[in-house]
Amino acid sequence: MRQTAARLNRTWLTLIGLLLLLVGAGALLLGTGLLESLVTSAGRTLTQPSASDRVVGTSVASALTASWAAVAAAVDGVVLALLGAAWLFAQIPRTNQAKPFRLYDDPMTGLTRCAPGVLTDAVEAQVKALPDVQNASALLRGSATEPDLDLKVTVSENVDLPKLLATISQDVAADLGGALDTEVRRLGVQVEIGKISTKNKTHKITLDARRDALETVES
Image (tube, rainbow, N blue to C red; front, side, top):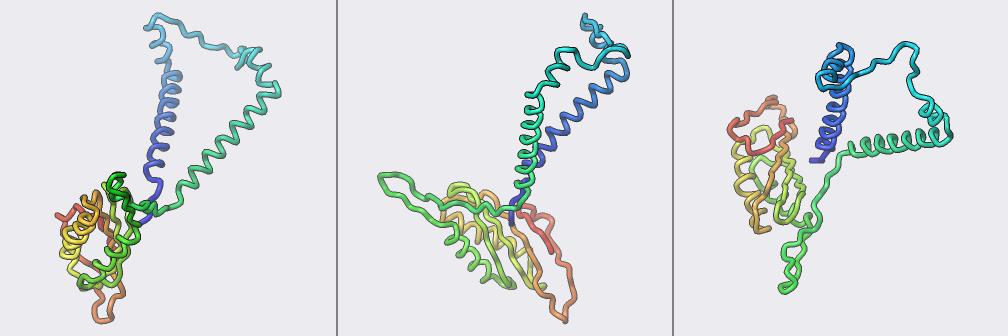
C-alpha cells in the first residue's frame, strides 16, 4: 500500500525518449542527405564542412580553454548529479498518509479536525469483523472531500472473495464516506491468503471478472 514514483518515472522517461528520438531523427536526416534536400526546398543552403575544417571556430576554442569553462562544466556535473540523486531518492516507496482532515472550516461554526488514524482504526475493525477475515490494515490518502482508501486484507482459503469485495465496496467504503459526508474517490484492496490448512492445499481463488471496480492483488 505504498506509493512509488511511477508518474515521475513515466514523465522523465517520456522526455528522455522524445529527446533521443529527435536526435536520432536528425542524425538520420543528415546521414541520408534528406536534411540538405529539405533545407534547399526551403530556399536556403546547407554548407557541409570539409575534412580540413575545424570542429569549432577560434573564438569557441579560446572560450573552452578559459578557466571559467572548467568551472561551468563542474557546476553542470554537480547539477546533473543532484538531479540523479533526487530521482533515486524519489524511488523510495512512501505511504503518503493523509494529513488531519478538516471537516468544518467555517470560522463562524468552528473548526473540526480528525486524524486519519481514527478513521482507519474504525475501518480495520469493521473489516476484521467480516467472515473469514484474519487481519486488515487500512491507509487513508487524499483530503476530506476526496479521500482515497487502501486496504490490505488477509483472508482464509475458504473466503467468498466476490462477496467480501462487494461488502467492502458497498458497506465499509460507504460508511467511511458517510463519516466524512462524501464518497470515497478511490478504493484499493490487496487480498492475501493466510496460512493454508493441512487439510486443504488449494492455493487458488476465483475472482469475478465483472468486479473491475476494485484493485485486487492475489498472493
